Length: 110
Image 1 (cartoon, helix red, strand yellow):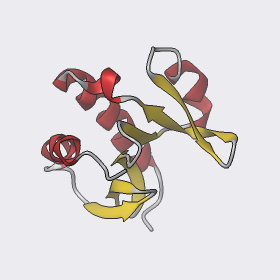
Image 2 (image 1 turned 180 degrees about the vertical axis):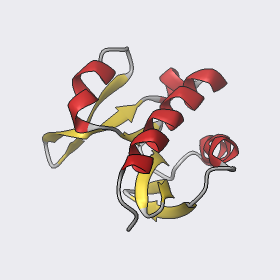
Image 3 (image 1 turned 90 degrees about the vertical axis):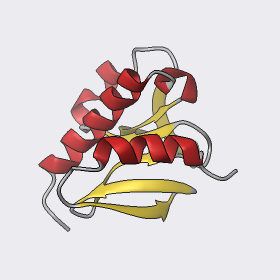
């Protein structure tokens, strides 16, 4: 499945003024990176893939339509899958994008 181009456009409008942002196709979607570290992606499986502080994963998976990203059957702390239903409203999308940007900003540049 290709990533949702409309969702990518909505993300792009949020990250547009962020210093050091670049776009890269990865994980079957379109990722937005800050100084080389992934912040958020319009996922090829629908919705978002959001990179977060691993220590905060448990708190962030509490809302409906949010879960740990799973790779090869293993759930990953620090990576969240946020379903499309959780980002229908612009303010909800902005919230998740800002969480991803905040964590990516905290990482050393690559």
